[in-house]
Length: 343
Image (cartoon, rainbow, N blue to C red; front, top):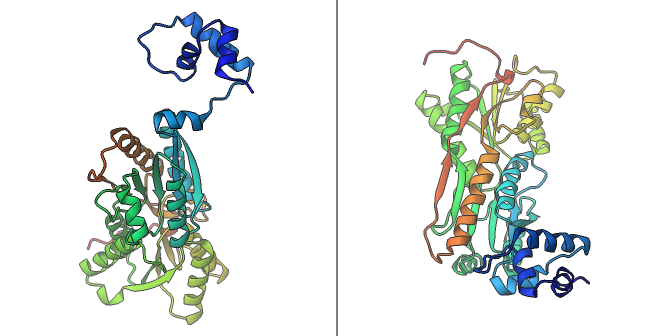
């Protein structure tokens, strides 16, 4: 195994100098560019890999962040992860990725496991954990930096990055109302989620504003294409047909669209569809999906930036910061081109 001592001997420098060069450590002793290049070249030739565990004992930092994603198969999170990775790599950090598979129990297990693995901080992408369990409260009290991306933080010492879900729910619903729709289904989440609750409140607010409160039609589903398909199929089998559907997310909207098509109906002529997220493939749905955009990569970057700042400052018990991005309605062909009503 190649050691610092071997590299230093071959380069003709002290072990301390080799260490400073390879670990990019500041020093009052000036090291020439020629010496730096020589040490780095020898390290490459000898296939040297620093012992990150030994380094973490010295610096009390591992250079690793734990990332827990609600569902790794959901394309919504890929954009967020891209943003996270860019910022972490710029700061010399790597991450351990765990998928909770939309399970609060698994999310809690990974929180505990990653904390015991001595990561420098935790990023939680989506999820349902409300931080009320005593074990999780203890995790927060331990002082490990935690940032949530994709939903509002329920804890004053945890920072979060999210989109304005209430406004997003309002915008999508009011757009359908202005297109002349009155029989609108809002498909919300079957599990209790803060983002789902806020989107539903926005939907209800738009219905109330236009005096359609009694027509507020709510169905529950899991946030998957399969569940969206199943719920929409059951609705169509009952005979009472909506003129528009506003789904919790783009993936469930995809299932809704497939169910509508399988029943010989057309989008948007028979039923209009609106999603939420604006995942990369939403524009390639048939027809392209009208949806509420979340700036996923920007949200991931901001979450990672907040975490890096918290790790550096390491102020235990400091109040968290909540960043809220604006929701934006992206209009495509899944709602048609009816004349917008002046309401």
